[in-house]
Length: 327
Image (cartoon, rainbow, N blue to C red; front, top):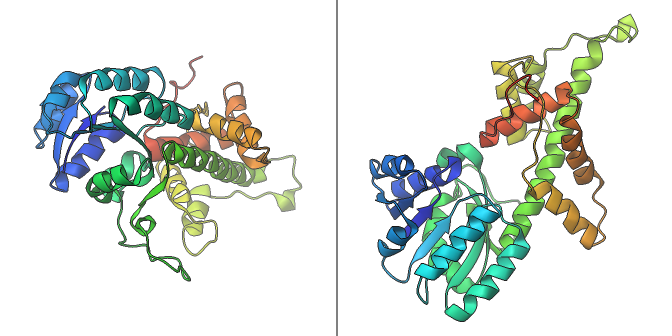
């Protein structure tokens, strides 16, 4: 199929590359001309304005946004809406708040412009591994977008369906229509809240292992533990095995003391939104809330646990932190 990829950052550019490898026609746009030119050398058609991106597509058009949530997404949707025609589809694959998706769909509907949201997980590894895609929008637009979703997703290879499943769905391929507009980003929001909790559990556990050598402990209870080896061990047969553990083991193998990380851990918004959603629904979310607060604390004082968190974020998403020692 043909679509425009709007925003060629860490994820957008790699998604465009995966689509090109799947024989899709990609129009590539980014504010910086260099990014569009780089994709052009790999087979994409470059566009240097949003108007050019729209004009390069055959109607009805599909325009997939991968730009930061908030004002950049709002401005992009507003400008695209002024350029699009009835039947065109705008897809927000970034990390917008699901309530913004609901509002945008409502605003665009009278003009006949379709809107969908796709929660996208996969980070900087998605080009090779594929992306987990959580779609929110109409069934009609889901079917229209499905060729691209199928290419971007990991597919069935390597992961067998859960035993006892009564039906086969696209979830087994790594993409799913979660529900109407907003549901995709709602599911992704909770996904990221869970991610915070899992990361915090690993971080605290490795911090305890590291601190087992402290002199205030009785001599017979002190252990000089090799965290890189323990993380590698747990990757094999342990019930706590996961991709996050794989990335932790990778970080510890490269830098056992994580000296390149300060331990200043930002939060990208979805963790806060997940906690807010729990409050609105009166659902207890102790672990998710504590994990979020731990990130707030990391900006004041840093522990080895926070270095583990920083290392995981860098490994799965390419997220940086401010230079070591800066304030």
